[in-house]
Image (cartoon, rainbow, N blue to C red; front, side, top):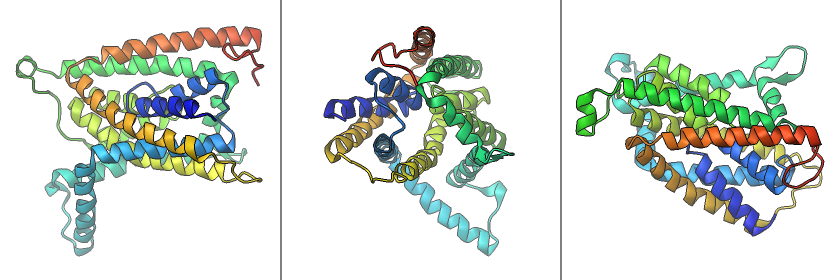
Amino acid sequence: MTILDSVVQGVVQGLTEFLPVSSSGHLTITQHILGVSGTGEENLFFNVMLHIGTLIAVVAFYHKLIGRLIVEFFRMIGDIFTGRFKWKSMNEERRMIIMLIIGLLPLMLLFLPVPGTGQNLKDYVELFTGQKYFIVVGVCLLLTSVLLFIGSRCSRAVQPLRYAKSGEEGGRSYITVPDAILIGIAQCFAVLPGLSRSGSTLAVGQMRGVNKQKALDYTFILGTPAIIAAAALELKDALKAEDGLNIEIAPILIGMVVAAVVGYLSIVLFKWLLKTDKMIIFILYTAVVGIAVIAISIIEMNTGVNFFTKTPIV
């Protein structure tokens, strides 16, 4: 891997991990264009480092909130063991912790075994990440566009005129148990390449009537354990290499730093675009890219070769 490849993939990961356009989908597209395999052990390890870069970005942006949540978590554990915990009297941080735990529970569904196969649901999802299933990325990007559109319309429906005039936002400023469960289920489906995690979870929050900035903060914090889990699973697969990893340190470190810096800036950008009601940018972008990927995929299925590299599709 060259330095240029690592920079390009770092930028793609940093932008798409938090913007509602699907990081997995765009990494698949980038690797497809560059002719880089995303399944080799070295590339899996590189993906781990990119995830760590974006993890650094979200922790840096939300460090104050994450710090308060960590402190409140240990206080809550103390109250549970001493019998002082009360559901109805939870403060904002404690409610957020409970809703984060509930929101993460649906992820366990991905690890349910499929009877008679020796595999789980996540293994089946990964079958659709190869070059010959490139069309799946396009279809999922279109689905992301639809979800963003519906979420945006629902958000406007709960935006009273007086709020629109004052610049304040309508909608609930807290997450309920049904909200957390449905957002968590949306996060499960986002393992499909092209279906944006941040976009789908934000859209579900907006459909439920949650304040759009509150829904976005929740989905970013909820995504932190998901990023850690994704990095851990990819690292596990990378370490299975029988001959050891042939790692080039410079490209990996550069890619990780680029992903961290670009990821932080993308969070700032996303929050501003959401606040100024410019989600139409992402709705149109995911629709256009999705249609383009589907068109290219159809051409590739007819020719049997990669549209960009002219190599056979396997």
